[in-house]
Image 1 (cartoon, one colour):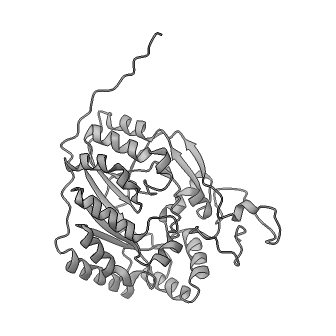
Image 2 (cartoon, rainbow, N blue to C red; image 1 turned 30 degrees about the horizontal axis):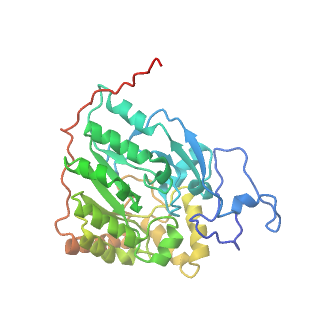
Image 3 (cartoon, helix red, strand yellow; image 1 turned 90 degrees about the vertical axis):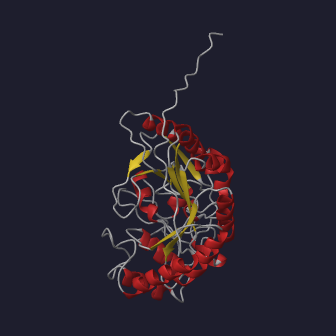
Length: 361
């Protein structure tokens, strides 16, 4: 039984409305009586982000999933302030001793040695230059990046090594690093995908409460394209009966802004994400909650998620097929020549190591 939220309480500015139980923990916080004040901080939506500093052992991770078109990823942050209620990365927060719910968006682990670890990895004699995804889990340009600048530090390392990188984000903070992105793009070393889930601002504010608006994301695409940085749009996740009808408009506007390619996937709510999303949906859109959940299940063989490779990202059945066809027709109409230049792995070089000489005085 979830004990950290009340059905009568809606937490503005948060995606998750509860903390799900972490199966890896033997104990949990509870609030027995909602009229009491025994644990008010547990339901305080305005509680400031708690930062946990981590000296990670590695930053570049091998991606084993055949569904993902990448071999390596790196994530300088664990947890994400954006608070996207559907986020598949919520489950991984449990390995750090937190909940996949509210904890995920307000307890953030920062890997402060990430740039140094990346450099160490790229200096290995066994390293073969292969595009790295930044990030494959949480958004590398989430709000906390403004202060800690770990993503910028990673890009600086990649530029020195002339190493290719893929970036996906839904935050306009990426424009802060335009200088590095332009330098990388000069040698075909960077691709950027901007995630746009909905053009409906009211929906965006509830579903992705601390992200940039869709209008701002379109401006990001426009600015990147104007600076000859290869950029596309990721129209994901598609949620049947909630944002699925917006596919043509998202693709059209992104193409007009300068996107040259696109991608999509259907939402899958594995593990506690199903509980987080269902609770949010019933509180936010009670009039259509049953329809949305029913159609999601129809895409995944009667469940809220599907773990089968090759099928879990796109779904199956009539609704999944109709989404696929709508997406395909939209791309054919607005991005008929969708493509990006191949990332350059031949430019990779190991620069001289910088040694700091200590003064005797």
